Length: 464
Ligand code: SAH
Image (cartoon, rainbow, N blue to C red; front, top):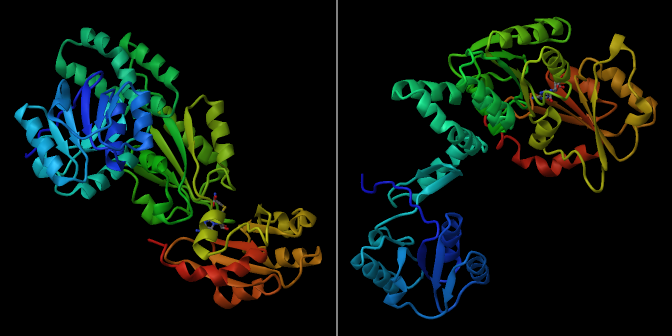
């Protein structure tokens, strides 16, 4: 190990920054965040840097560097583009045994800046010892996605109970077990879901010796339209901690693979007529599993609140007092339109967009047709394949031109995506001709014409 990672307490300490440009500014920002009083020495100083110094109780010496600038400083940063000057600052600091960092010159440094994930008081630092800073930054980016932004609050919660827990469990092994339960169980879940007061209450009860009652929880998560890259950070995190997964037919296998390996998987998918499990049974199963103390992931295609019956599922949970979280997903309309090069709105063609279910009750035309044919509006039909002949017929009958551009997008955002464009009049023919299958989205409106210009990137985006 070439460098030993240490965390430097700088509150109220003087830190010398030699240089007054962009790089000095970037480093100074970190130092000020850490509570340091910066002393900037440079003949010219960036306006923003000057403002930062003024606002944080530091000092600017607007002239060339002199060794005496080091007096009283606990850390030195050389951030000039004059290599000889940087080397001199480094030598002076080392002689005085003051830690020194020279930007982009590892050989002149006694300390280096890591890439930082800041969830204060929890801080993760990653370093490549100056050999490959970009690699360290990429790892940092991965950690950023993996560590929830509210993790710091979890550490804060632990800090408030720390001494009491220490008294309660003088034995370090017991204490570790206690905290592991806290950080991996419902208390952490509550805190990370933004319910700090409830987390505090549960931890208080646990410290007071409440029996380990572990209420389960349900995560109602939108998995997006198919491409796993379209998952949200939060979706992925919950997928990796759930004990059991209930998933739909629409959830792509590549997405399911991202769930925790040892999680139990239950298929509850629905096809149009042959329901694998009636909705009431799904609702009941969610309640039962959560009551057993499990963390239950209800994974749904697209967004759970858009034609996903998510509302009904959480109504049942709420009625039973079971905690739940809802994580939005990218709905098929957003995903498919983006990957097919069809903007849903456009200043010249569509000032509004409607998402409509094409699932017709009793095969009759029970949709608000006069609204759907309004001009300058894009209409997106979900579940519109079966009723497509009726949909097209009714739109034309109610005044939308038979020439209105329209598109079919099958398995949008996946590598199997297929897009067919035509007009309202010939969509049903396209379905038969190309054997179009579900899941398919139907987009009607002038915006479809833009695809000819914008489709060049199709395929480049789909990663699965
Ligand atoms: N909650 C989902 C929609 C469920 S309804 C969402 O927000 O996307 C199911 C319908 O969504 C399908 O019949 C189809 O019309 C559409 N759909 C879902 N995923 C799709 C995909 N990858 N490509 C095309 N259409 C899709």
